[in-house]
Length: 229
Image (tube, rainbow, N blue to C red; front, side):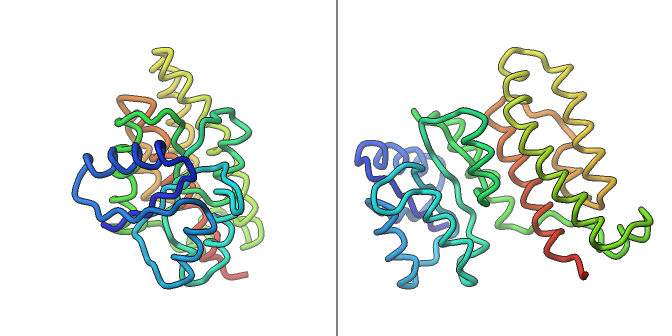
């Protein structure tokens, strides 16, 4: 799998490249900043995934992400943002912008491997979901209402991430399991069968939680695009 690593800080870039390389068989392409990455991508580079620093001169990580999502040939590229910022607002902003995952600096090997494992699952096949028309019929709602429900549920998933991570790090697995089960139930109600399965079991660590929720958010967005208004 070819992976693009983007970071204007040479040390951070080399460290991330080392962690990715030590996690499996990956062909790594590097870019010194967002502008360099966009030049390579617009020139035909097609990696299986991109790990990109959030704050960079010229073209920031969020700006590069927006360019990628606005390009039809690149829109589905799994995109993991990396940053020293770990506040809830920044993480939610990254996910709303379409980030597949988020890693906090300084890098931990377990966090990088968790993201790579999640990307491998997404590369294999998107999470299955019920046909939106069948969901509408089952719930007795129209397409517009289903779209609103999916948008609201995505917001719920985004808000749940930091809260669940805190609970897991504090050892409150019982409460975390209850909250995760509510999210799983929401997935099932909205016809997101694959996402419901992905959230069926509480992960062993907080590091493995973000990829799970990221995959669920990806399933929500895919389902919203399938709705015929």
